[in-house]
Image 1 (cartoon, one colour):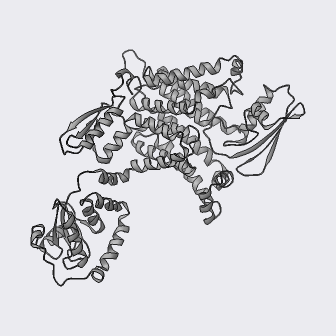
Image 2 (cartoon, rainbow over the protein chains, first blue to last red):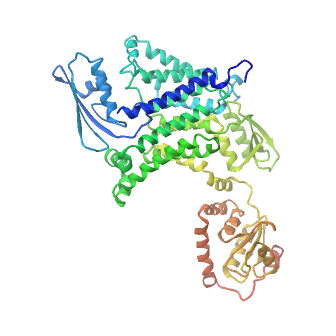
Image 3 (tube, chains in turn red, cyan):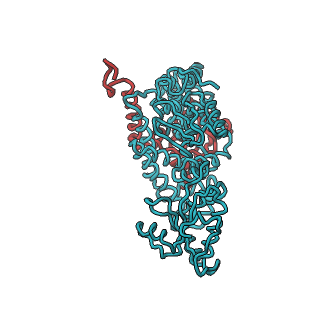
Length: 122
Length: 490
């Protein structure tokens, strides 16, 4: 150790590194209380097939327009929980799309299970 | 080509060589995928504060500049840790600023770069190991808690319904419903938990590397080259943290009497842009070797070490694998076979210019097959490394009895290497003889990698029928006068 240097557990680099790991542990623990799985280290643990239909001001958007709106394909697969897909649409409509009066219908299934439907506004 | 300036060499900065190389490989794979080009304005961020930066036109260029500055720093070895922090921060900010940009693979890269940037000699690779363990523990836990993984429905849906994987569907049709997918599910879960445990202990580093590479390479092969965007390369590069790195330059000592080895050494020197090697001419006809921190490696082990410690080849490998998806399974399988530890003896035998040592072959003196085998060896053993003695003689009895073998068991051929060691018997003895007869016969000796009971069963089958198929003499045959000196008790 360099003269005058702090013992390594208290030095800034190890503290920051430990914080990064601790934050991930916290996210892992939190993920058990929410359907979202962004930071759970759970890639490829679900096969979610979904299709998105969105109408703005009574006019139905084309798949290309829907893709541009949410940066999600209108028909596609996601390797994680369907909650991740629905979360992006919900967040968009609550923020950037607020006031558009969009009506959204998402049909999805998980791992080949029964088809479910989610609508916005809820 | 001369090595780069010392200050620019791999490991010449504030990161050890293996971690510096990991960072370079990761950044190279991200550049190949044009990752900085996919940085954009915040969009559906994880924290609303990022939305304040939308439309300013600053976020993407700033993070792109940080990423590229970090990448340049890593290749020019200017403040390697700070460069890692720049790349990691650029990636992490983009992830946090956009749920559309988020992926587990990108998050893995970002955290690896950040932890590399936070490396200190005092903590060593402890945090990188913990990160690896955490990732695989999280992956295993998610799957283990999911009913569709227990039941096999996950893989069944993915392989049969989504990608319509022909070989999977063909094998699954032969088995009870969902059995194959359950096997796959539980193999992945067990492997992920095992990696999480193994990564914590440096003494299990080799196993960690092998298990992780086998898991991801297996998936890559099954899915015909799928690397899940950048993830495969990231994991492979991150495993360098588990690989021993030399404290001083490696010495390549080559056989100065061999033109081929001289050319190979010159090529190694030309590829060594990082000054990792000291190439030295050794004594003529002495085996070439690689010396790492006083430990000497010869044959296949030396070649494998040389390939692994030549970063230019790793960069080239990445550049070949990335664009040619269909080639990837073949490259990955070839590399796994080349580096698979149990196969090292096989490669040694193929690569060795020296023939395996000789000895005394003990054979059934009245057997027609044994007689043909002896004549076969005599014709091809130009260096006369083998001598011969019948099992019915006093030499065989003296050589076998101390090791508990019965010289009266005439259906076994033996090879006595030296008086102290136990003789080789049956198939092992035959293959050891083949290994000493020259390149063509050495290839045949590669069959030795098959399980010994299987080989001995084949040997016994032939030995049991040898008199019937090849005849029997009434007494031990006398050798030709010219070859009599090769026989003990002719």
